[in-house]
Structures are given as C-alpha cells and as structure tokens.
Image 1: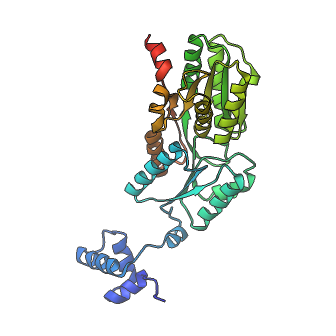
Image 2 (image 1 turned 60 degrees about the vertical axis):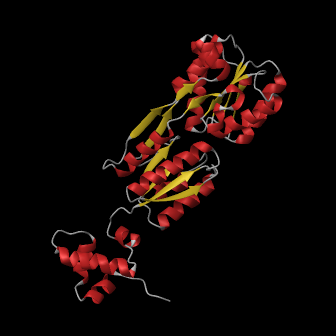
Image 3 (image 1 turned 135 degrees about the vertical axis):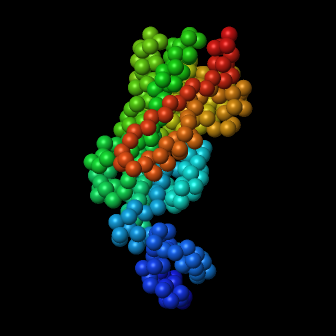
Length: 332
C-alpha cells in the first residue's frame, strides 16, 4: 500500500524544510519564485492533495459544502443543484449532495456525515419534524436555509422565494374569469413555505372578494401522491372551477390526474401549477404556472457561501406565467 504524499515527504524529496514547502503551497510572498515553482511541480508529480482535516484543525473553514435536498427527481431541485454545483466549482468549493426525502432522521444523518468530513457550510431545505437534536451539528457549520426556514439559535442565512404576489395574482386571474370555487393544494402548515403559500392563496381570495372554504384546501406533506389524490378528490366533487398549486411535485401530481381525466385540459377545473418544467409549455396549449428564479437562487446561495458576513436573508420574487386559456383571457 503506497504512502500518502505529505508536505514533509515533498520537503525531504527536494532537500528543503517542510515550512518552506508549506509556504510555497500557500503562495506565501516570502518564498522565492524558483523555489515555489519547484515545490508546485514536485507536488503535482507526486499527486499531493491538501488535507481538509488538517485545515480544519488549524481553525480554517474547509471548502466542503453540503447540499441537503428532499430529492432531485423534480426539475426544480435538479436544476438548482446543477447551477449551484457549477458555481461552487468556479469558486473552488467542493459540493456534497445528500437527499433527505423530507425525513428528519435522514436529514440528521446527512448533517452528521458533513460534520465527520468537517464541512464548512451546509445549504439545506429543512425537513419537517423535531430538529432539536440537530442544533449542535449545525453550530459547526455556516448554515444557508433554502426555500423553507426555521428559527435557529445561531446566525444563519436564508435564500427564499417570495411567491405571495404571484399566488394572489393567480387567484385574481381565475376570479376575473368568474371562477368562484377555487381549490388549493399545497404543503402542510408545519412547513414555513406551506403556511406562507396558503396565506398568499387566502389573501388572493380576499382581494377577489371570495370567502374561504376550507373544504377546498388540500394540504399535507408535499409529494406527487398528494397532488394526484387531491386532484381526484376535486374531480369527484364536480363543482370546483379551478385549482391553484403550491408545490413542485404536487403540481406534477395534479397535472397527471387532470390529464388522465381529460387529455387536452380543455374541460374540468382550470389549473395553475407551481414551478415551470420544460414540458409545461407544450401540454394542452401551455400550462399556466408560478415561475421560479432557479439560477438566481443558486447565485444568491453562492453569495451567502462566500460572503464575510454570517447571516443574510435573500427573498427572490416568483412570477405568474400565463399560458393557454388564461393567456387568451388576459390578452382578450
């Protein structure tokens, strides 16, 4: 078994002190150019890699960043993860992705693994549940909360979506088409995003002069299955004019059930989705939806990772994208 290349082995190989090698690898100004070039050349030949553990022991922040997502099945999380990975690569940050499935136990296990490798930061979509046992784990890293947020005991940044205006606008557009029974399907209120999106929907009803009907509200743990089951219940009622969605996977679940009932989406409840997968442009003349600023979310996350300050909140606006029948109505 070959031995790991170290600063001391490079120093011995070149016949210089290990302190000189260390300074050369750190680009210290007191090292002569010829010496630095020789050290870098020999380090490359031997395959030397800096030790993240040693860096952490010196009290320096490591370049390891954890990304905790519920999944990467839906297009939003996949696009975000790709954009953040590219941005991290450009800034010499090493991104490690963990999938939590919105399970608090899997989230805790992922955080434990990040602590084991002494990650310097974690970007996370907080899972629902009791997270008190995660508090000591989070204290060892810079924390950036994505989409959802908890009240933490330490300074933490948040990169959030401000979809309140877009959701209220969607309700207003439907009400303007004389839709009076408008259903909502979204995440449970224990999630910050779930509570905020439902509040935005209710605000839209109020602005349109419509009263609240709790039998038209379908909320639970966000999932494709929630969307499908809710859509089927809505179709079984037979009196619902429109459906507004408050979640990425939920939206696809609703859409699949509506397409099964009517391939063209020209009859039945009018639908406003959440997120904008590429295929939404082509289904039934186009699916109206809440568009999300994916690349900008990744860019703001990188700002939080590289900034000197420990805590900042970024709230980026979503927008209502009108297509198909709704677009024709607004233009008319």
